[in-house]
Length: 117
Image (cartoon, rainbow, N blue to C red; front, side, top):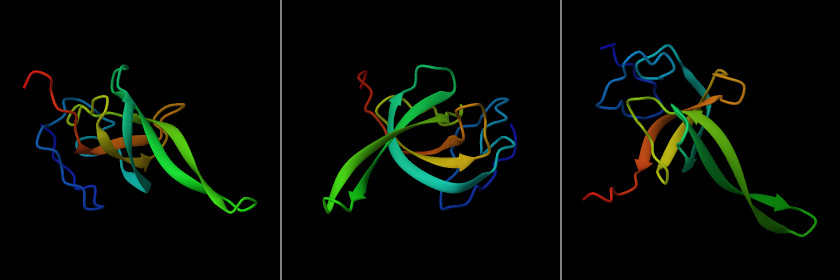
């Protein structure tokens, strides 16, 4: 198993390791920089990818009110974390990994309870 890197930002390293995932920030070649966002996983159907919804509020000066805004961001889901639909995750910005992916999942804040328990 590869050496586990400390990516900083106060994010702990996962206990589980990755096997040959070069896009993992803990066990691969990727470095994180820039924004760190928290959101809910909407879809985890594709291999090693998740779609995360970020909710925020935008101020409209004409009406002097706030409007809720939702943004969908695609992120890499490393083997050591395996985020599922419904999980609340932290994602960090990195170099472009593909045409639409520039973020990677770095921490699962709260997970969905298994139905098998």
